[in-house]
Length: 275
Ligand SMILES: C[S@@+](CC[C@H](N)C(=O)[O-])C[C@H]1O[C@@H](n2cnc3c(N)ncnc32)[C@H](O)[C@@H]1O
Image (tube, rainbow, N blue to C red):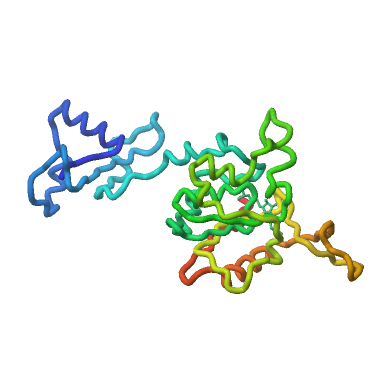
């Protein structure tokens, strides 16, 4: 057993070393610990954390809170830096921040060999996070340019996207290309999946209509039917508004039919907070 601690506490232990005073450890006497203390190779590590707040110019005499617990695992906060969208090969105006993408993947309990789907895939930030945990990933988006990685670049000092700016290249950047299933152009209001296609998780960031338009294929007007012999290949469907309530209703319906039992749907829901 070893007593170990975070920054605030480490400072405290240093302080103890100087003053040779220990008034916190006796307070832990009630714990039924038996056995020898092994600081070099402990079986269990216990942490004592004292929270003195976040204002370095106003440190109280006593901590606001004291936490004591057993170390279970290290966090993976370094991933936020190594997966930062600033260094990402292919990004767009609405690429999801790396930290938030990892939180979503964790909420979805994404694990190795899962199949994860993002119906509003954009530049694939959520697929990148899910593939980090070993899941196979696929996605769809209504925007042809985004899916094909073409058109105007989102980076400052770059006008057009380069030849290899796409979601597959993003996975390659992090050594996860083998987990890339595919992405395709598709309208989420008219899913193209066969009836019993099943995903282990659906992780997505639907359009809110603030940063990007919420459109779907279709029209309120009467559409003139194309002639019988029309192949349809060059046909570009007109689009109409895709209301938020419809987006979420479609998403929930889709998840109800296409998630494995116990599979999770994780998505952002915009809320209005006037204050
Ligand atoms: C908030 S963005 C997703 C950003 C993505 N998570 C990323 O990291 O790049 C929403 C995406 O939904 C797409 N979208 C909008 N309407 C759609 C529809 N009807 N069907 C499918 N995708 C749609 C947009 O083209 C946009 O890429």
